[in-house]
Length: 268
Image (cartoon, rainbow, N blue to C red):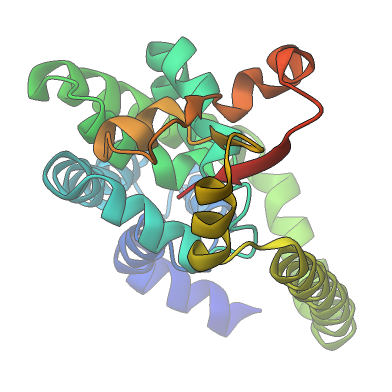
């Protein structure tokens, strides 16, 4: 316990910066525990609360601007990459873009508290053409809120946090085993769901050649372009005769489709 505390005190600022930076780069390194610990060390007088806040901002803002400019100049490619490495690629963009478009200011301010949106909010802001000035203000405010929300509890409850840390270190092997087992079960479930989804999708997939044959035979096929607005705007081309039916309004409009025709959905 003493050795770890000494190490955190001596290199706390660097560890905090690195942890936050890796987290903002969308790597599986949760920054929350380290930010809380930094707040606790500040509460005990080992670190400066002001300097910890500045360091969290320094870890967030450069990466956020990197994602913003990548989204602005490379658009949908960035979202495609993010969803490729996601364990939920089929819902990665769909679950965030609609709400982000409707409540862009609120979404960006509190994006760091919403799983998935934290990573997608900066490139989405760039893709939607948000001005640099507005993004700078909102991103800075979001990072500051994030820093204070997690630093202040550790600062105000430093004694409780130190006791929790002591218990965790004392029963470290048992706690690590429980956490690792839970993480492996969660990961296995996500991978299994993804494989099942891909298998179902492949069974229902229509190859372009088959679709062409259906189209040449007559109006027996109805093509629905279900891409969300951001995805469509990034590549505003679709198949001849296709109707636009974004997923966020699919349930309300699906009844209006001709049920006697074969429905073919196209997406990203």
